[in-house]
Amino acid sequence: MLAREKSFYMKKDTSKQSSSSLSGLGFAYRLGLEFISGILVGLILGYTIDEVFGTKPWGMVGMVLLGSAAGLLNIFRLLGFYTPSIKPNSKFQGDKKDG
Image (tube, rainbow, N blue to C red):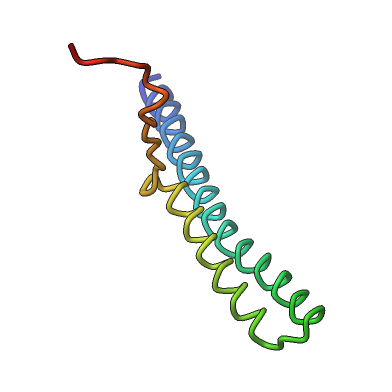
């Protein structure tokens, strides 16, 4: 009976490990998708700009660079390295007059 209980708990622990590794894998996929989607959007916009204005290849080069920067910024936001700080404007703090 002890062996059966031990095997039950061991199975329970391995399921927790597999679910945590799956969530880590999902997070890794999301990071990769954020970066690739930024590049693809830049590529499509750059190609469109090049076709409309006839600026081949500079529109695509510029927009791919901007898309890469946007993808990296999204990755930094997901990882918590970039948190935009909102500084209050002095005119919204109220009129406090020093005596």
